[in-house]
Structure formats: C-alpha cells, structure tokens
Image 1 (tube, rainbow over the protein chains, first blue to last red):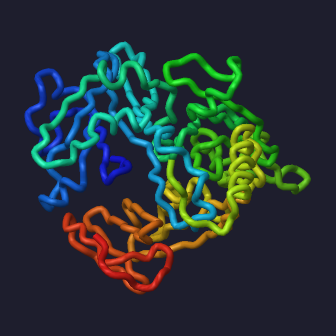
Image 2 (cartoon, each protein chain N blue to C red):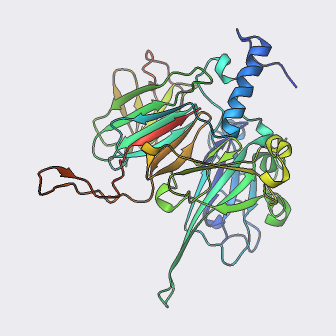
Image 3 (cartoon, helix red, strand yellow):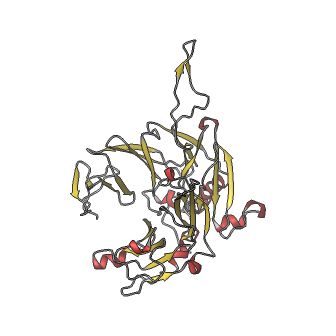
Length: 270
Length: 142
C-alpha cells in the first residue's frame, strides 16, 4: 500500500480477485495482478474503507506473475519550516510512483530464475482517471493496461528481494537496480531536466530520463546506494554480507581479509 | 501558478538556493559524506519515510533508531535519536507532519504517548497520541 495525494491510497495486489469488498470484477481480471485506488474521504463518510474507486490492470503478459509487489512513493509531508520546504520538492506533475515486483520461477528442469523489476508510473497518469470520482455513488472503474499504462509507463530493473523495502524513488529521481559496486547511479525523470539535457545525455525510452553516474568516495568501498531522499543518497554494503573473519598473523598483528567491507551506513548529503 | 508560503528569504535568495540544490543533484555533487554510527546493517532493518526520516529497527531489541537526514543546501541539521519499547516492533509507520508514530506488534497495535505505551488489541487500530518527536502528550488523532 502507498498513500498518495488527495487523501487516497493505492494498493497493489497480485490477484485482483482477492480484494475484499470488490464488486464483481470483469471476466478475465480476477486472477491477474492490479492496482486498486481507494479514496479515504469517501471512506470516512461511511466509517470504513469500502471498495476502490478505480482498478488499473497490469500488463497482461503471461510471463508476468509476480510473487511480491511493493509500491514506492514518498508523500510530500514533513516538519520543515517553509524556508527549507519550498521550493525544493518536485512538482506533483513530475512525480513518479514505482511498483517493485519480484518473481521467482521454479522449473522442473532446475533452471530456476528470479527477476526483479520496477514499473515506473507518472502519478498524474493514475489520478487523471479519478478526478472528481470521490463523490458518492460513482461506479468503480476498471481501466485496462492498454488504456492507461502501455504508452506512458516504463519497466526498469528493480532492487533485489532483500532490498525491496528500501526507497529507490524520490520525486522524479530513481536509483535503478542493481547498482554497480562503488558507483552511484541516479536517473532523473523530471521532464524539465530531460528537456534541458542534450540528446546524448538522455535515453530514448517512452518515459525518458537523464542518467548520471559518479564514483563513490574511497572510504565507501563495497557500498552502493540503496535508497534516496530529497537530500541524500543512503548507501550500504552491496549484496548480502558475509561477515569478514579477522585473524592474527604470525607476527601477532590483526589481519583482515582482502575484501573487508565495513558494514556501516553512509549518507551522501546534498 | 500560485504563491508559496511566507518566507524570510527573498525571492532571489530562494532562487539561488534552488539553483545550487538542482546543480548539486544534476552532477551528483554531494557536499558531505556522513557515516551513521551504531546502526550496523546486520543488526537493524532500514526504512525511509517522508520528511527525510531514516529508521533503523532492531532485529533483536525493542528499539527503533531515527535519523533526520541533514541537508547543507537547505540548512537542515542532522538529528539522531531512538525510542525503546517493551517488545520487538513488528511494523511501524510515521507521519512527521502530524508527529505520529504507530508501532505494531505481531498481534497488537500500540499507541505511543510521550511517557507511556498503550497496547490496543488488534485489529482495533485506535491510536491515542503520538510522540515520535518527543513532543508533549497530544490528543487522539486516529
């Protein structure tokens, strides 16, 4: 679940038919993943959350059958004073919401595969379908993938499963996954930034971005960005830690393994 | 287009701040590398929340460490503090603008006040007050 502006929240489900209080879904939707959008203002009138006001079907690809789905979106809520709050946040029209998916395929041949992907969605793409839909008695809308997502969303590699709960998205900036060791790689989907960039700096995808990569400081060897905020990149050790074992050499001095990574968390502060 | 909130900074000062901020992100030129102490990745589970709040939930103790991410360009100081609980937190959520923290045990939701912890039988999910930023005891919000 992810809260979004206008007192609404979005719920990602791997099987639409499992949602409670859902009016009968159109034939063919029940067993597929979907995004369901709820309106809390509407719910407060009836004292409980009723059915969603809109359901967005996801790519009806036979290969798309995620076991885990996580939504990433950071509401612009904070306790800062106005001096530091404005105008540093992205415009609502520039903000993205990301759906992280993780899929494990077990095959009888033993050729098991896993895939981690993220679907990037401009938040206005979702809300444009529900403007004015908070009124009572508005029928639930089912919006097929080809209508809302096929031409304005983008799939990218996502974080591995053990990092699914971290925040790879802040406003229009994304940390794609997986990151290269010792590098920081940030993609900016801001339309302003993309428009200002030279052609060679941006990619040619449906939802274009400007990609920037820099080397991390030496003391952060083995680390990589795992989360992003408005003000910092949060970096931790790559992959799953295998604790280094220190031992004493013949001379009695402490010897660390060659690839010793400090497990600390670093902030690269802007 | 609409006016922003009142500010002690002039328009030109705000514009200059914004330009420096955007340039820094454009080229990934951070101004400082801060090492967070006592939040070993193997011992804590990290989360990131609105308002630039990082959280580290202990895997073994009833404790959550909070870090307010600083910003030199925006003049936000770093702050690190922790809250202890008589249980290992299961899940939690926070809203810094409302000063609310909600912590769940596997079978209970718990409301936090500045000087006490109130267990509430799940799934009642009624929160008495906050105190995520150690503010005075507030009134019920949820």
